[in-house]
Length: 602
Image (cartoon, rainbow, N blue to C red; front, side):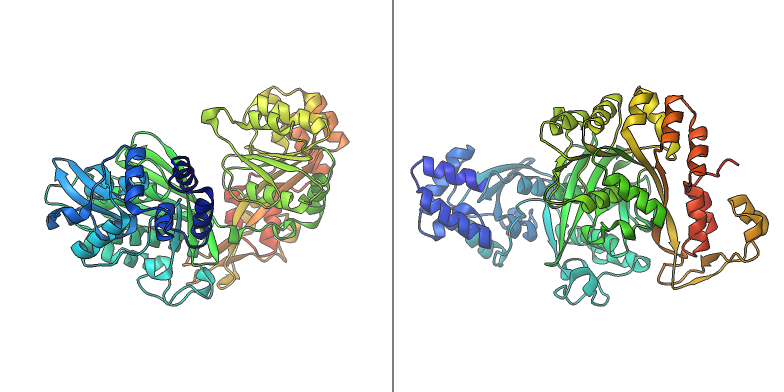
């Protein structure tokens, strides 16, 4: 937008190219609107810019110094929004509110004010100096801050906290004096927000609405930042008939952290949709967006936002993508020595296909990113097709899928093969076309990494065959299949020996001969793990190299059970065996392994 305005002004002969370049340099360093910088530098008069913008946007211009604004009209828009967006409400007619704006093309500001007031917005243009003077005269406050240029929001400690001690781990050394409260006391985050929000309807009456911006912003910031602090992977915001529920997924398990009154659901959900640049007026269709949160100056966290219309309103789910918690070291993911060596050999192969399988949330993306990070050097061209791109990795060409314009996995994969790739990662093999192109790439000198949704490594072969891929293509292209699960880790602060019945242990898969010296553990529950007995998660892996014997079975059309039997005989550890090993090591419980893995056929 800034570059476009500069070009238009140059084309109209109002400023020179050199003027715009100087202004853009200042804007890059200090921020602000390009027009305001040009005026400040004396390159253009404010009135000329106003006339030019009025023609460009097709809206009338107004001199605020010549009109008197009704104080009741000014009260319709909260002071926070007035200062943030540099605008002034000047007239109300029926359901339409006229705003004098320095930038009438700021759709973000118009949508925000429309939500706050319930009025349809009619923008007109005024000089920024006139707006600032009117704000100071009408509201008695100086203007500070401006609207975010994108969906990046800087969250300082003072913006969301209601008490607590300093948390340098969250914000770094410059985090502020206060920090977030714990999940157990999270209801206190509502505090002033609920006290101050008595009227939060989608439409406001002619008497105006209360200033709901600050408490709702504070509440939403509190939800987001507390989720980061407690290590949640997802936030679920769910409207029901009598309650508005907030849940966090912590260590793979959903936990209710607060129940809010239903009267604020529209305000909270609209705030989240504004932050993620979604259409707040569209409540009938699902939408997807993204929020980037800056915590102080040293940490950024992304939220992948999905809204879904339900019976009593829109449910919003946010996946937290915290690059600070991303582990890209294969040796730290929990592999045993032999499976780790087999996996490393596979990803260093000059060509072939490596597949990672497991349900949603099992850590497949982390494993693939770690693999790419391991082989990412300056002499290799790595390209990925992802939906969505979860983390940005330096040196890797990542492409976001856009099905609405025809950019899907198969289309991206075809394009990749014309980009001279060495390594290709496909986010997921969902259909025959993607599988076929990926396998042909693997057979023509490329290393292809991808994921599938299957229960274990051997059944992945049958999944490819069911898609329509010929057995000889699967046998000759796939070099390794890895299946994985995540189980909760026993809390180290309250870990203790757990009494267990021998029959339960043998049923889980332990051999009778080892029961006598076997010690299993559990967590008794403490403040560190919020009384759950678990803190963090550990991965279980099933690594199946496609050996010559397994290739023969694939060519013969063997069942997944037959392939599994041969793989186990060759030394493969199943998911259940991997889980039992973690029980022996005191990392997880028998119950977690039973809940997340299938028993092996004996």
